[in-house]
Length: 485
Ligand SMILES: *Cc1c(COP(=O)(O)O)cnc(C)c1O
Image (cartoon, rainbow, N blue to C red; front, side, top):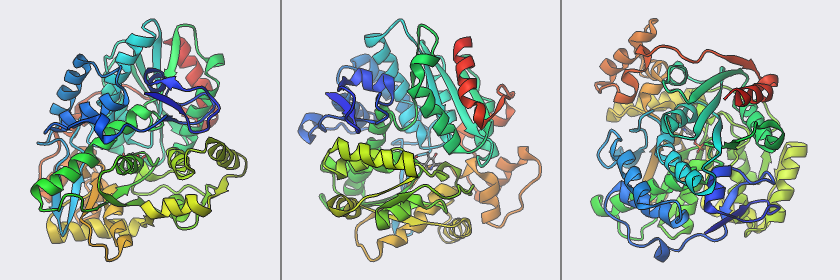
C-alpha cells in the first residue's frame, strides 16, 4: 500500500512515510494509490475495535502489528459508551453520537488511534527523530491531540487555537491539559490564520527545524486521521440492518456537521468501498462556502469569516475537499494542482462538467444561521428530550435538504452539548449562570443527564498554558518553540 499526493508532483511513499509526514511535499494531501477492496479488508469482527483494527490494517498493513491492534482495542474500550458510538433514534431519524471519548468530541475517534499508528511508524522509519505534532485547531482537535499524544515517547504536541470563537470549555480543556510533552498557544486571530501559519511551517520545515526534529500533523490532512473516521459509518450501517430493521443494501443518508471536510470525506470513502451510503449532506453554519460550492461548483473563500455558535465549522478553506476533487476528476492530479493554484492566487476556483456532476450526485449542502441553530436545539429538546450541541443542530436542520428521500437518516453528533453549556442553556430558555463553575451543574439539572466524565474534572485542574501570539508572529513562535524543545 503506497500513498501519493493529490497534486502528483512528489514521489509515492510507503504508508509509514505518509503517516509521519502528514502532508505531501508538493503541498497536496496523501491518498492511497488504490483503495483496498472489500475482499482485501476481509470479514469484520463484531466490536467497534475489531472494525477499526481491520480498516487500519487494510490501509496501513506494516503499522498495525498485533501489539498496535491490542492498543487500539484498549483505546476504544476506554470510551464512555457501550459500542463506542451509540446510534440513538430521535424523531424518525438516528443520531450517531461520536462524543464519548476523553475530550467529548468526535476528534477523539481518530486521535486516540493516530498516536498509536505514528508511534509504530516512527519505530519503523526513524526511531532517532523527535516529532513535533504541529496542529491548528478550531476548538476540538487541540485537546483531542493533546490527550492522544500525552506521554507518547518521541512526540511533542504544539497546538495553536484562535482566541476568537472557541467556547470557554474548549479553551479550558487545552489550557488546563496536563502532560509534559504538550503545549497550547492562543492566537489573536481565527482558525484560518492558524491553519495558514501551520501550512507555511510545513512548507518551510527544512529551514525551520533544529537537527534531530521532524514535523508531523494531527489535522485531518493526515491520512491517519481519515481512516479511523471511516469506522463509524461502517458500524452505523451494520447496526441499522441488525437492530433497526433496515434491509441489507438499502441506502442510508448521512448528515454531517462540516468544517475541514474530513469527517464527511471519510463517509465518501466508505461509500466508494461499497457500503450502502446514499446522500452525504454537508451541513454548514453561516460560513457557507461549501454550501455554495456544492450548489454551483464555484469555491470562493473571498468573504469574511464569521464567528458562530458552532466554532469548529468556522472555516473558509476546507482542506479535505482537495481529496474529493482528486476523486471527482478521476484521479487527475494535474487538474487538482491547477485548481489549488487558482485558489492560492485568486481565492476561488470553478468546477464544472462531469466532475461537478459526480460531486452533486453524492453530496448536497445546507447552511444554518445561529438563530436556526438555537431553535433546533430548543425544539428537539422540547419534543424528544434529546439535547444537541450547536454543531449537531446544524446537521439536524440540514436534513431538510434531503426533501422526501425515504432512506434512513443518520445525523452525526460531533460534540457533547456539555462542551457548549452557555449556548445550550440559552437555547432551551434556561438562565445562564455568571459563575463559570455553575455552568455544567446547571445544564446537568436542566437536561436531566449527567455531565460527561471527560468534562467534569476540567475546571478543577490548574491553568498550564497562558501564552498568546499575534497572527503575524505564529511562524516565528513555532520556530523558537521547536528550537527550545
Ligand atoms: C471538527 C469538528 C467538526 C468538523 O469536522 P471536519 O472533519 O473538520 O469537517 C464538526 N463538529 C465538531 C464538534 C468538530 O469538533
